Image 1 (cartoon, rainbow, N blue to C red):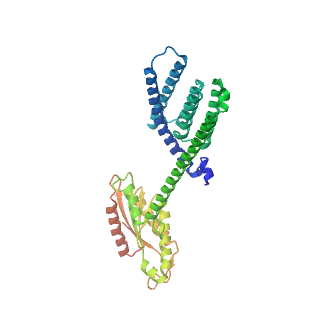
Image 2 (cartoon, rainbow, N blue to C red):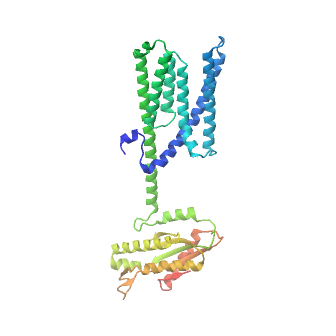
Length: 386
């Protein structure tokens, strides 16, 4: 993504929705703050006007008072809308998206109406300055949108001031006024670009940091050789999802598997073949248990730990037997046992269960599954024991 695109308010497509949501949330917060600012400002101005010495009825003053009250009312309306949106009382996406930006346009329009009441250049310019500052700093718009508002505000202010000023030539040829207007316009336009670019860059940096943290978390919880959970990652997963939770229905199963005679296989065929064997066993267990929404981890060495849920103990035994047969049928052969040149690689499996409505105690189930695994080894290997 180039700097040019950043300046014009674009973000990579994969971040677009999250960027829009974050920008909208930020603008809603600013709308809330700006509404409070408008309300406080108008209250203070009205109090000051009331404290001024009375000079009799003045139509111009009455116009200002009416417009001030309108501005105050708009501030109250937007304050209420902002609070209702933040509390999720209003969920209509059209209203939610329109509130921050419509406030900006309303306020600019009100400032231009103030200008139309002025016959003095300085007062018109002051209103123009206020409108531009609000555009640049209170609401995060795209720089193109801010530039459009700046240009419209400038042209409208100039025309209104010319219309109301009897000495138009003095305005047109007043270099000080043009210099002030030009400086303010360029400065506020530049600040709009800077604010918007900083907002996008902060957002992108935040998203990239989140992605890096996710990748680091995945690396910390994944076994480097087999690509499945490592022991630490698997226990985090089990603690969050299952531990101390009641079994909703059926049975919760812990499966402990060990590759039979793996040390001999590794010694006779070499460590590279041994690593390849472990990777195949891991992926086979992952694919088989994955069909039943189960998960598996490398528990240590050639041992694997798996969990899954099943409707009954009988169906759980069938799934465990399916895992055992899937490994045996992978046709991973090699010199494993004395007198057997090309015997298939097999696994021994121990199971432990938690029945319906029982609390799941992961450590206890692993202990029982481990005991049953040793029974499977002692009774001849390549079998499932409960």
